[in-house]
Length: 219
Image 1 (cartoon, rainbow, N blue to C red):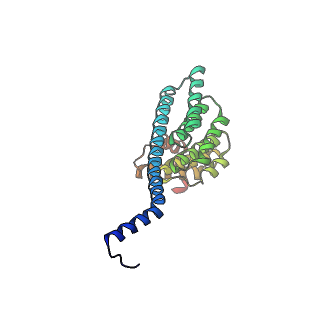
Image 2: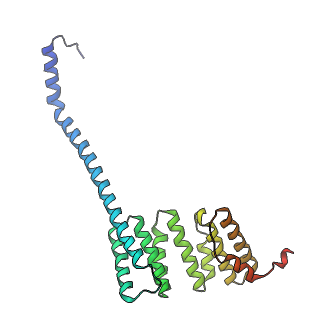
Image 3: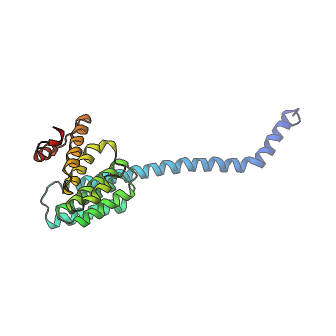
């Protein structure tokens, strides 16, 4: 670029540059500002959605705190589940609501309804812990439905290590349902070991082992 010799020439050059590029520069700044505004607006919207979902989920938890729920309470609970899952589908609370829906279905002896709710979480959740909970509960349902083979298949899913003790416990239940006492004993013993290592309470497993009696094969 040739050297500009006078202030007037420099000023003329600036004017020409602005005439040629000013519009696009303004547009770029406006787009950038709009992008920042849009992102902030989107973040605020997401925060508001999460807060609303949290409030609705807490209402659901409070409503279903008791074990014996009348028909009106159950109907209201189902409406809350639908509201959370329909209007806040991308939040953690929608998945937790489906897990709670499954528990309510079990309380009503609706195992198929519970299975459908859990399968929706297991099949769509991107949160490994929540997904693992769904697989575990589906496995328990399979044992309760006299399908221990299906339970063992579900327990082969990549369940998070944080639930390994519970996984081993249900695996023992499935083996016991199949009459495989040695495998059940091994799984329950593993469950107790994992629970101790992870400092997690795991109720009822020692009673299951006691019911099996002495492992004569280990003597």
